[in-house]
Length: 396
Ligand SMILES: Cc1cc2nc3c(=O)[nH]c(=O)nc-3n(C[C@H](O)[C@H](O)[C@H](O)COP(=O)(O)O)c2cc1C
Image 1 (tube, protein in one colour):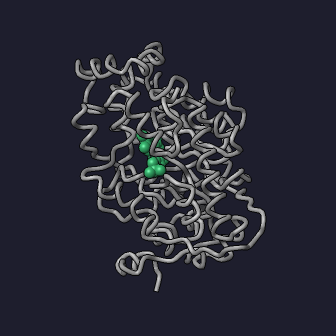
Image 2: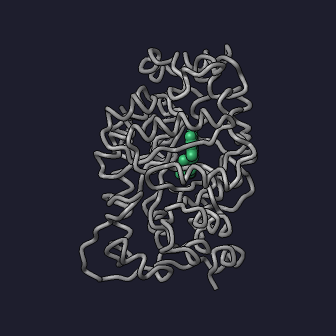
Image 3: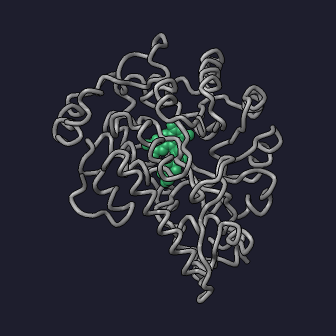
């Protein structure tokens, strides 16, 4: 349970920090190298002002379609690896919390609970995330299992041909060690709330691959092994082959350049996620929110444009929708909630963000997601002092 009433995603982050062993918290919280893109992802939202129109007197409804289904507000849970280490059965709890809040979720292929464990518990398979692996037979095995499980959307992540270089993970030995080090074990022992709830699942690894030869045992070894299995020479034709093979909708996740969105449309993708992986992959790439407007102005209506990276407030959702996103994925925001209080924490974070969005819409004088989209950039303006950002996001 939380010690004080949490008022924001930031409060959940602090609670997660106090509960989780440092190695785990920094795995969730950290970004690539100097973390400059990680920082800009959220900071750049503050360069955008909401335009307020008062006394509209209309009822606000934030519901909107995401991943082919109407959500109670226009978000879904982003795929996050190893959720089951933050809280036992974390993947199942996150899906159940999402459904309780009336939104969808995407299961990471690097999950602790396997596809076959998650699906019977959650009923509705909104989306499964795929990393294309070096071995085509193994990629096909995962695709076949995801197809059999009945996931409607396949989210193919394309910005991870190399695992992100994260200084915090390196310092902690996460993904470079073959087994937990003495300092990791001490770190776990010094976090009794996490240890008391998690000790039974400490032996678990990445459920989808645990039966594969060479993968090793336990999360540390398996995460290290699997990060070496990512297909480093991945091309658009590999993605096209997956699009052709998958029976449902396909969303390409991890694009920030308009030309890449054109390529995704060209190979038949139904959606893209404008995302820099929460600043965890290429440090120095522009913030996702700076990349969004140009992409939306060119391709809105041709493909579902989802957005993630840096969302910590409901007002961030309003800004992303106003800049052309059809919907948003939440990453660390819900992971902090899960680490803090399991499914209750995820539900609380979702409720908080939904309320913040609804209030922001109401105070800004917009009534629906459609209304935001219709008024588009008229909903927001930029701080004049930042002409460089103006140029980036396409404001004159
Ligand atoms: C701990 C962690 C693990 C992640 N694992 C995956 C993953 O397995 N697959 C994937 O496509 N994206 C993964 N992501 C990226 C998220 O899907 C999403 O793009 C990112 O978290 C959005 O940024 P935000 O956390 O600032 O909201 C991960 C992110 C975090 C924080």
